[in-house]
Length: 441
Image (cartoon, rainbow, N blue to C red; front, side):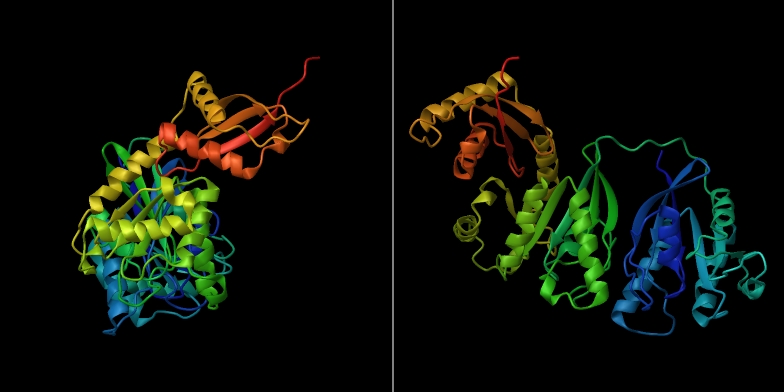
């Protein structure tokens, strides 16, 4: 049974993300004293008193404005409230009741039996009485907490889990695939994720850089849980001047670190920038699977295979390591070939775990050595004796040699290319480890 969902809502800068981080553990949501930093619904797993639940951080609710981005955030908050089994409304005891608090409370009063009112920034919950003023919201007795120090959060969680529906004990799906959707700003990453999920799960706006946090969104596809991590756009470090942009870049890099498969989104009209190559190289070096989704293909008038192949060949000439990476030409706007992304994710995730029998490894290794011997120096023969696969995710092969230090990187690339030609491993980096034969004792 699906675990319960809890949404954290409230106006900007009342400490929602700080409380989210306190409950989930670590610093998963961006915390900043500037209002409006959190824009999307941000998912995280949490547990208290033996109860597991999803915790959802939301953007700040701003009252009385027609700004397009603010309206989009409010829609996200409303969606989170509707989808949640329980809601934590966070208010600021130091600033008192705010018109935005009243507006959110009015929405929540329809389901007040599923709401916990968290009166944050009560540094001494046992003696601070300022939180009583929030009784006028009509959501029951406020629970005084300090998200920054953790005071009172235990009492808050005790009250929260009593509101959650009964569920069976849930274990994490061992077959879950974490998918990071990455790329430069404004290439359509959120639009692709929304298209795949079938709902407006992340804020989409025409201004670049709308997504700040990495956002987890699970999707069940062909009996596998695909956990999509929609991330802030990556740009050159020298251009990341804004402090929040800097934190967002770190979040994206961490998302790539925990991903099994990364979908690198490229704008078809802009082409493959140097920054795309750097992102791809970073993913490849980390050992994650990689798929390149060329988005906005509907804007390209000459949408024939020749045009696609010409652009793809130019990229492969600049970055030969991408020859084993699948390219898919999609349109998030029209949905053209977007489902192919899901199929490729499953394929890449599967081959990333694939194992090759030792006898097959040595058959291919012997054929490669017969085709081209390692570079030799006079009086210092180099022999590759045998090999075996020693790991998966990514596939890693150990090759025993008499003088492993004398095998140059160019020959190691030759072996990797030969292994890929023999077994495929589409979208997955292959590692080769050279080891020296142990002598007899």
